[in-house]
Image (cartoon, rainbow, N blue to C red; front, side, top):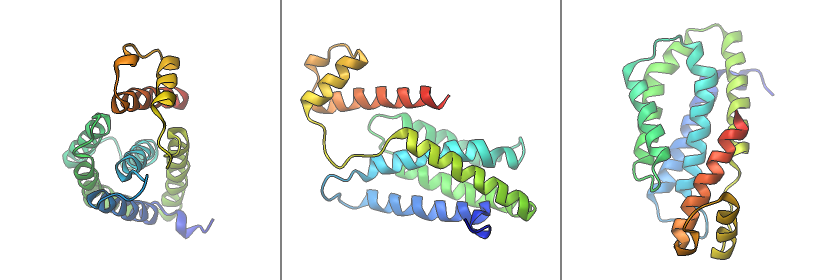
Length: 181
């Protein structure tokens, strides 16, 4: 790994561009089985986990109010089942980090920025792996029903395909969060 590429200022800049590309994909009609909303949700959740573990402690205990607000909005959008404001929350978080976090990180010594960048990458990749990969194949109602049965979801026989997907997704996220602890 190139030592310059691990500088947290460069890493976060790249991360912001990648999130912005996913946000742009969400505004366009989806083709095939790709779900840009789900990809954005996974990537944003991993980003928040990594910045909370590596970046925010490095900038000190005080965080600007706009960053706190953007983090709260992003967390709320991640937890919402339909995720209507996910793209807006991600955009607000990127803007808050660009204005409040990146300048403070740029003031740190280069060795410290590299260390933070490496920790950020490790945390982000771990969070992405634990969230599982998005599948291009849609699961059938029978598969979802079986997963819901294993998860102990009540009233599963009366659920529609979308309701089963939501219940199974919530259970899988809870399982991933338990494994991450």
